[in-house]
Length: 109
Image (cartoon, rainbow, N blue to C red; front, top):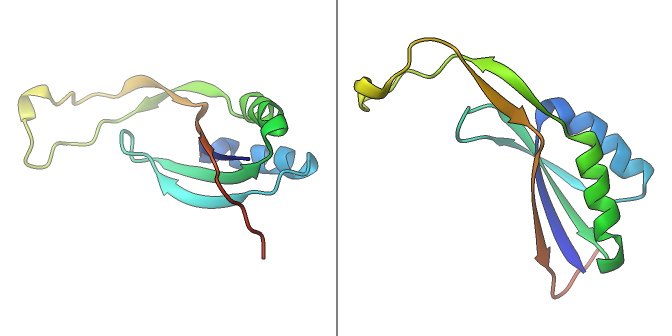
């Protein structure tokens, strides 16, 4: 058994949740915040049998898209103002960051 931890952008959260439910993958959704852009994310936790890990990863890949987005940088608070860029920049956001961890035991009560 494996624990899949998938951090996805909020824009992809509902689409992924529906796809996982339709494919009978039980999951827990947690609200989270990214450290780089300080934007909202959703973290999915799933206990998955070893033979279904690739199917779960395919669902995540198919439902979480990366996209380019213009963001206004946050002003440095007490940091080095020399490296502050005062105009919006385009960055790639979205997609999914996924961790697959071995599980010693799994209990559902």
